[in-house]
Length: 74
Image (cartoon, rainbow, N blue to C red; front, side, top):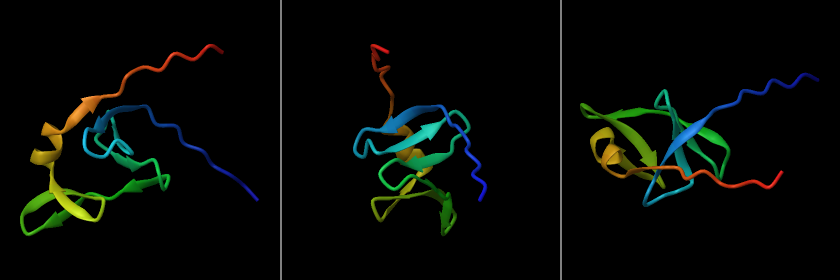
């Protein structure tokens, strides 16, 4: 059995759902499930389904906050 691991640097999180985080390329990840969230189109609006509700990219950009660095003593 083989395992392939890919590492992402997550920079942004949503203020209303902190378990959804984004990397510098705009990929969205759900940290609770450990999966990447696919970008979807509803009508002509591009966005993501966050907590089973669709949000457009325009609304999500307004809710982004920078992830604070955590001090690790190791």
